[in-house]
Length: 364
Image (cartoon, rainbow, N blue to C red; front, side):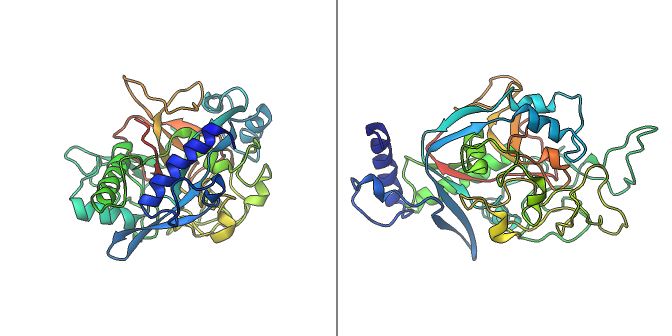
């Protein structure tokens, strides 16, 4: 470990000791005192609601995808639509990047129960709940795309729907990932958690809870430097029992599954699955769960169609937050480590979108 890395670790260690995220030890301990990769700390949100964060050390990774991966994604098995710009957003080729600071990542996406604690404590109204607000949800009248006539998609904007009722057609459970939340809503949750922990004396000015940067997210997803389609490798068939995407599962109250390309197995859920439902098999080498599939995860960065950035990326006009990871409705080719899209705006929300928190140095 070089001098710069040692200095950085001493700073991070001294800060984390003060918030009880590390065992007590001298602030100038040896670099080997760095917590083990995958160390888990439980944050108490009150009312028997907790949130786990996992330690991730700094390191290199390859951002983006190869042409061979893009070809697979738009082929028969991947099922993504060929001939669009979507795969170009991943960059022309994988490129080496570095996450320079250690951070802690939410083990799972923020759940309904965790978000409920925030909303009940603060009285917060999401963008979808505000006057004139709406969110994108499943259309219960949808019965097929109708490719030969007027194409009808399964989703439409609705007023009166929100994270409290995402229009799934079945009861909402606290263990589901929260959806129908915007970039603004995710940031508000993180601000509340930061202020709460700081007021309790558990969080100094050196760290904050926030959304992960795009580089942190892809690094945490890949958990290594290899450029593979999924966090477990390139073989899609090895994903069985690991994640929730479009698969052989009936839609609620219907005798049909999602159309288009599907995983050739049942993952147990046509819509959302509970967070960390797949256990150890659904966690990558860092110990992070549900990084592919499940729900799209809204990221701190603004969208650059040319590709992701090593440092956090913002624009001043017409910001479009990045979302990552794919969702329960997606075809296999749209649920890879490299896939990235830009949302319509900071206030946009969707019943396929959620978020995951990060504890790290401020990035704004």
